[in-house]
Image 1 (cartoon, rainbow, N blue to C red):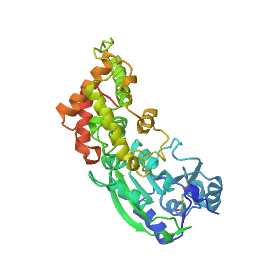
Image 2 (image 1 turned 120 degrees about the vertical axis):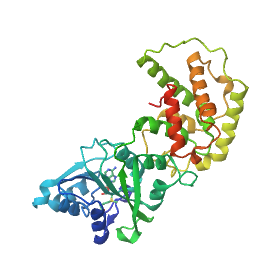
Image 3 (image 1 turned 180 degrees about the vertical axis):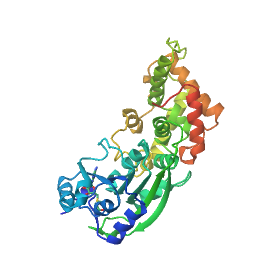
Image 4 (image 1 turned 90 degrees about the horizontal axis):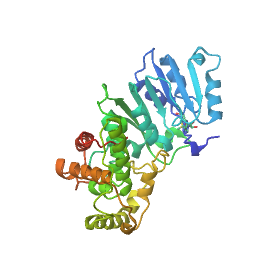
Length: 357
Ligand code: SAM
């Protein structure tokens, strides 16, 4: 019996299963990672072409089933089943990833594959149609998100085929698509963590101006201040740690917090949409506390703001100068920024000693 909470929709169309494996163009020397082998419809086809298949499966009954299916055959020795959640598993080396993905882990799995070094040669992945569209979305599209920017930064993505629900047993509620993700080689010469850290801040509210995402929330500035202190300590840069001249909020700060608050009301429905790849609130449990804090709707609290030190004001000024003077992106909304805008921001922030990790 299938457990649909685990996304157990078995591919019953052998033609589709064969096409997925064929699209990976496997070599006899390849180590393949398969996510969620289920009863092994893809696994047996992978083992025909590859040196080895590492199959990560969460459900012990399924892990037993796929093991039994190849036991005693020559291919059986070339299958390694790892029992567990692929998101929490430290993965061994693999050349290629093939997965009829359980849809609830689409987003964290994609991020995990994009962050993998050395990058796999190719990933052939079945996703819910709408998720696939998010991978392709361009600046300005409704589905444009942190996921889109990351996917297109680190990989080239093609749509391979549409797969209707009736190819699965039981049929899922949604239509599916198989995509090919080819990580760029060589990898772009920037840090994955820095890039993703920048995007997380920009896309916390993708409909807001970058100014308010960066300067309108104490939590983001506190994070950047912490990173800046680490950066200075590592590079022997002395810091003047006295109290700032200004105490608490000035008029502009208050206006911005009020604007944020209203913006929050306007955008709440949209921003809390669990489908928003910018947040992935539903499936990413690595969300730092300050994002949760920022997402919670709050009243302006200017009066309560603690007195900030000189370092905090220095960081705020660096951030302001990058957004307003050096790039003029302060008034742009993340959903309209393209890869070039984000690269420019990262480069100039880093030049100022502002880091995201
Ligand atoms: N590969 C099979 C096929 O194509 O017929 C089954 C695919 S089914 C859509 C997804 C499989 O992923 C299920 O067997 C499910 O138990 C497994 N699964 C769900 N969540 C998982 C996770 N976090 N890590 C590893 N496997 C998972």
